[in-house]
View 1 (cartoon, rainbow, N blue to C red):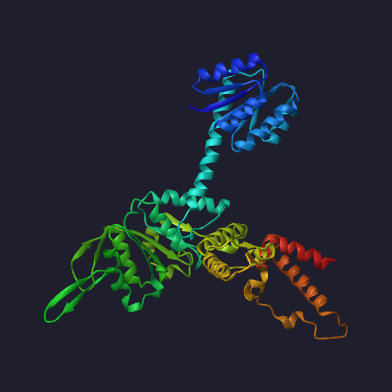
View 2: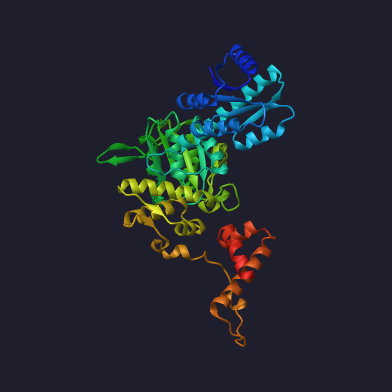
Length: 456
């Protein structure tokens, strides 16, 4: 039963409001005194607060602020006179959720209460979902609160409940293996084994035998079945990264496994029943001209029923501060340290392109935390490559003036060249500053700052 705090200094309104809510299965705590209302908020948990604003009462505005000091997510409905809309607007600016005018229709009030409670529940569920889904014992998961990643989290939650084969697409280090592990841990197969295999690391002649197993001949005329990855992990989940590196005949056997739940050991005519969940990974989308030649078309169709694309870290720059904070906290705890990072060092981390994505960032943070003895990571501790821009294919002979008639200071010359090049990239990007900054490998804020500095 939702518990509601009702505050009004109008005794008639307070009693009628309490009666209406109780008749509709709400538990109500009515208050006339604001101090007692605040004391109650401090001691008890409420689902909703309804505050009557008869006039521009400073006490009522302070009550809203006080409520959120103790229960910051508590939704608040304000009741105000029909000709006092500005009071309601000020109340909402101070933290109220919505308002209703007096005199109000009972049904309208009950509908407002129901909708407000529902919206509050959804907000809290989303917050808990973000927190719970990102928890991971080895601090490897895709830490983020951005909208694009939240969509991926939601999709993972849905896919985890099924037994579909899954295809993960993302650059090296973008989190394919840990995403596969998260799917396994949230699935009905979590009690069984999880196995990760990098197909590109398997010798070409051993790929098929490693996966499907084989029959070994033992002199004089005996044989021994050697189980492969699939048979060893019955009931569990197998993640095959770089699946497109497998030869076509092996891919066809994978398709048969997905369709029939059976495999055949190399050198045997006997079929073995295999119950596993298959998750595959690739560094690029297999459904394109360069990739379709390396993947069995029917296998691709089977895998693409549940496909997830993981964005590279350079496309999630606003997530980097949160990820860095989580990694620092994790590795500092492992080393029994308390470590911070300077704003300048964090800015450099945010502006770097991270070709190795999250794994590269994680490895760097681990090394920085382990080596740090001051309690604060500063820019001087960062590796030199983080200060270098991504290699740009520029013909410097074309943009360098070979005539030295007008010599200017080197710094001024470099600024002129930088500004000229930025202008060309901006023009090439159709005037889109965000796209130009992305092409240059810098943040949008850095793009604006450099542009303004060079214009002076």
